[in-house]
Image (cartoon, rainbow, N blue to C red; front, side, top):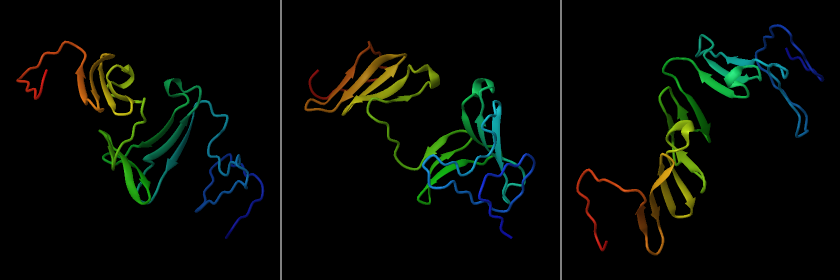
Length: 173
């Protein structure tokens, strides 16, 4: 059968249903479905079980203020060994996360002025396009190389450099 409720429902124990359709009205600030407590200070854990997962292996977790170093974080987890988390757009997988890497299906776009970091939170080894047509390479927080596409197309090295094999230069030095 069908149960139609015009007001809020609060369940303090287990609630088992086959399908849920939730609508919060037409207001831009409406909250159609709240799962977990808005006053939770530890975390709110949502487990997803399907016929393909015989156990609870997929989670969405919103960590509350009293959850130490994870406070304020939102996590998506798949604890099933060898399985992935993936994001689909228009029916195609665009990003796949597994236990070792992130795989992008197409190009990765980084806005001018942003950085591609290689050392995690250290922020000292990165590549940056600070202005259009100029790519800069930083190691240890110091700029080592710069490539600039312009009327004079230049490649600049900013630190004393040792080459471990032959170097060939075409044109004038």
